[in-house]
Image (cartoon, rainbow, N blue to C red; front, side):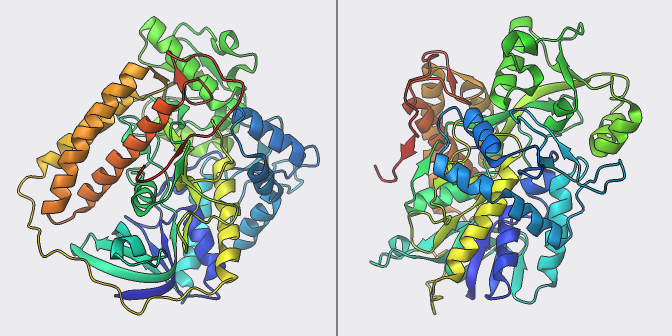
Length: 525
């Protein structure tokens, strides 16, 4: 059994930031499914939204966030996050993150603008912000003597009083599978933090990495935490459409710098759908693209930034420029074929302003949490900001209290299981789940489609739970178990919302109700 003051499950920006803030005072373990840089944070292109310009204001950023969230953002949380934005960016700069600077000789940081923002407030490192941040923080993590990084380890379940059959309700650690050795490790901790990211892989088409399987949300739900607003799955409007370009995102900043969405004949269509045109929030743009593709039988639409000089594109979007060029698309001369793809999980485990969940000593930060910031639709580049602000909030709460690390915990019980006889069950169920979620629980929904999805989810649930009870756990089985659980939460939440709001659009309930209320699911009810 391993023992740490704090166990962090996940190695994205939220998890690494928290680890660094705790490491001078505690022993910390980071459990990550693959390598430290394999999460969604490292894939983030656009940047981090914060009030950094004298032309901008906290109130403007709050207003933009509330507008994008269509009435469902918690105003207290939104102010809490936005007011701490500049300090969060200063902390990253202190760590050495190489943000892009203006090329006018002023040496000030370059700020770009994205959909839904009224000002330029996105600080970035060219078009690979997440990777620059993650590389900077991971170097510091690996050099710190108080941090243990367990790569290629996947959490199975949280260890709580409920799981142990005792009256103490605290979270006391987790059971974790060492994927390389096929052995289950028991990790005891005074505090446990779920920073596992979102659930993009529940859909057939996603901009998310393969690690985004809703693990933290599913584990927290099984342990007894409430979840909120899971129906709001954000589809990014512009994922590169190419047979050899798996999950490659075309940053929102391309539209922020003048990119225009067009039909195959070159006609712009966004002004027909919204007065903000290409700079409308993501839900509006994604639905508009979906509408035009279905109406006209198109495989994709096109994003045209070719009116900008090649030198500008190479400087501001070097990774997008290079990736497209490698696939035979010169974005300085021709438009980029794009389609919507699942991008961000706006809902998650309910937390307070200290990142605490419903279970003592269990925290959730980043995309696995529902803080109230994103409401019915996340404003572009607010996600990394949320990671930073709530990592700081969790650190203050953890360091401000005493949490005992359990001396002993029961080991993982494998006495009644055997090796699996057929792995095809997992791969088949994985494919079936992601396909029907895309078809039935996508950008535009109907009650009948949701009910069809729910029926299939229940069948998969039974099959996977039987498999889980009888065979040794594997990483693929654990991810599928969590994906099916997360899919069930999405569909349950979508069926409860009898209106269209933000990212949830129902043909059966196209109106928006006058009062915005969150969707809250309660475990064991």
